[in-house]
Length: 53
Image 1 (cartoon, rainbow, N blue to C red):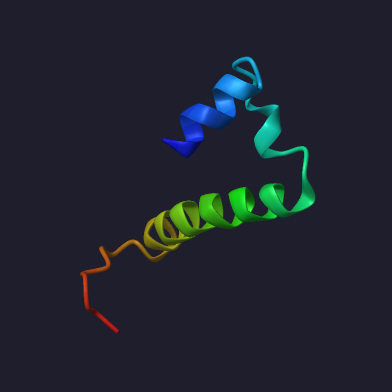
Image 2: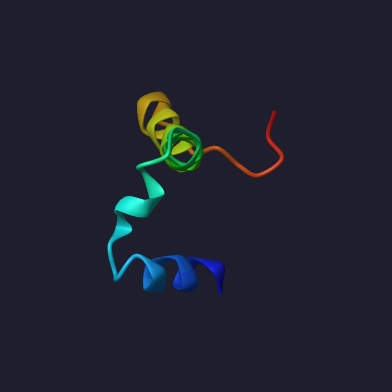
């Protein structure tokens, strides 16, 4: 809901999510949380099971 409101206020521009430093940092952290495990899995060559430590 808040995402849609922010995009509507900015007239459809997604720049609102990267113009402020804190929002850019949070967006980068979220992307890193999604990409880093995938890269590590590809690099190691073995699948990482849930709960595997």
